[in-house]
Every structure is written in structure tokens, then in C-alpha cells.
Length: 433
Image (cartoon, rainbow, N blue to C red; front, side, top):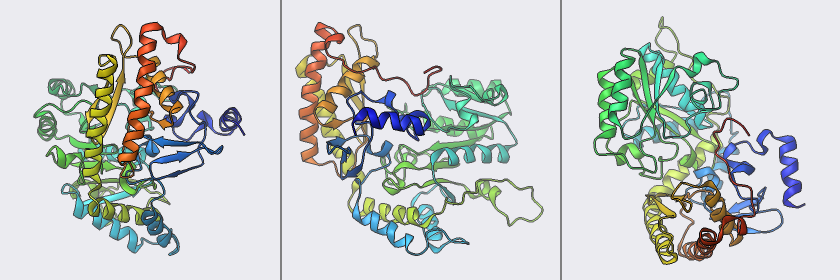
């Protein structure tokens, strides 16, 4: 079966052709594989036998490597115990104790299967704890949940009541005054600020601490979303890296090297609102998920943390990323296109940005670069690193980048139409298809 057949089948059976919009056809050049069969280490394989060095890494969820045997065996061992029992399991208790012991701000934890569940639960808890309704999010950070409270604040508002959209307010990342202004306009009505600690732009000195102080002064809950930063920036999360202490925090993605685990965690005074022990108190129906504490995935989480500690995985991500950034930057400089192609960000999570001849950010040139990387055997829709990325993979990546940026330079000089053979990739958050 060829790429087109698989693409047609996917769209016929699955709305959007995948269960995550980031995996959709409109996020990849047309020469990328439409479907994958398996992954191994830092590589993925299509059904027709093609092999690609991968930097998507399961939408950033894989930080050790695809198919890691230790993690898989830990999961399998738990599956053989029954995987999902009638009462809470020993594995569930051990996983909770591990996270509480690991993260200083965490006193209680509630597990789930994906990030949207736990970020939405954090918002619900904040509203229940404060009795307030407004939630503040950074305009520059693209995604927190598929639920109405967040998607209603994007351009994709179809199916979401205006009343829900109006309750989420946007501020500017790294602009503390924009947060203070909203706190003043909606004085006494802000339940929470939820944000990632960092974007590709680092936080200005004192910015995160300033938000923490504003939340405390206005009796709002300070929520740090660690979906991307958790178990990549620092073993204890970006909150440890930046020396902040959130009231609540959410984790997912790299918690279990690709297995489905997410967590809402934080201060006992807030988290205990979801408990059943305080007789006579009005209840908060927090999360209640049949598979949230599935033993297999939690076994994978426990083993992943063991490997991260033992093998200094996070140090490796930083080291590899430094070499990758330096290497690709050197190539862009050598090609004379350093102003049109930039790779930057934190070494543990680099990002590349593409510009056209006029200096404007260009999705067309991003598509061209991605297309040429695929042509050279590298799948790089974004850059997520893993412990399986070693010197061999770095050499392959830099060789592919040299070829791709050579074509990029030619397109800048002679016109895009001669080189781009794919439809231009599109933003995930757009009003119309």
C-alpha cells in the first residue's frame, strides 16, 4: 500500500486522520510517511520499510527512546498483575509516593491518561478553591487543553458557548504588567494563572516569581503546566530549574517514555478538595477515570524515573542539544542564510524558525526545510530529543541539514516554486481548513 492509500484510509475512518492534530497531514510535507509501523531507539519505520531518524519522538513523550526494553518490561510486568483492578493498586500508591518525593511542590497527586484532563482538573480545582471564575493564560503559549475553557479562547470557537470563551483571558508572556493589569481589571475575580514556565523565549529575570507573587497577593492559584518541560528541563521540572513553587502543576508526555500517564499535582490544601474524607463539606468532582491509574503505564513511569536518574538522561539532552544547535547554526552561517534560518531555545528542547527573503516568518520555508530533511532520511517537524540520540544520529542530522539548507539557500535566491513540491503546512489553530 502506498502513502496515498494509507492517507485516504486514515481520513475515512478517523476525523482529521489522526487522534492528535499535531500528527495530521497538514503538519508535515507530502513526502513524509503518512503512517508509521514502529519505532526503535531514535528511529521510526514506515510499512514499506523506510527508516527515518526521528525528532518528533511521539509528540515529545519519548525521552529515553522508542521501544526501550527496560520500560517495556516494567509495563509488561504490571500488566501480568491484572493491569486495572477493582480497588487502588500498590503500583498506584508507589507511583504517587514517587512523584511526591521527587517534586518539592507536590503533596498530593491524581493520575490520568492525558494532559487535557489534568489541566482542566487544575482549572476546576482553582475555581473551587477560590470561588472565582476567570483564568489567565499566556497568548504566546499555544495549547493547554481541548476542553471549552481553553479552546474557546482560540480562533476555533465553533461548538463552544460565548460564556465559556469569555472566562479565559490572555496576557503577554514576559510582560508582568499585562498580568497585573488583568488582575486589576478583574479584581477579586481571577481564580488562576495557568502557564508553561518557558516558551522558546526564556523568562525574563523575576517574571515567573512576579506572577507567583501576583497570584498570592490576589488569592489566585498559580498553576505551572509541565507537559513539555517536565522530565526534560530538570528531573524536578521547570519549576525547579527556575526556582518557583506553583500551587498546582501538571505533567504528562515524557513521564513514562511514551506510555499514557499524566498527573495533576500540588499543595494538599487545594488537592484535598477532591477527597471524600471530610464529612459535611461540599464535594468537588475532580477527575474520575477508569484507566487513569492503569498499572502498566504507572510501572513504565516508575521505571522511566529510575532510568532518568541512573543514566543522567536529562544531562544528555542538554549536551546533545548544545551540539545540535551549534552544528546547524554553523551550517546556516556557512550557507550565508543565518538571518533566514535560526535554531535557538534551550539545548534540552531546541526550536528552529524559518524566514523568507523579506525577513518574515515563513511556513512555506519551514515546509521546504522539513521536506528536504525527510528527503535525507530525517523526520524533523520540530525538535524533541531523547537518550537514543547519540553521536551517530548527530552526524546524520548535520549531514541532512547541510543538504536541506543548501536547497533553502537556492530557493531564497531563485524562487520557492522551483524547490517546494508539497502543500505548505498550516497552523493547528486556524479558523478554517
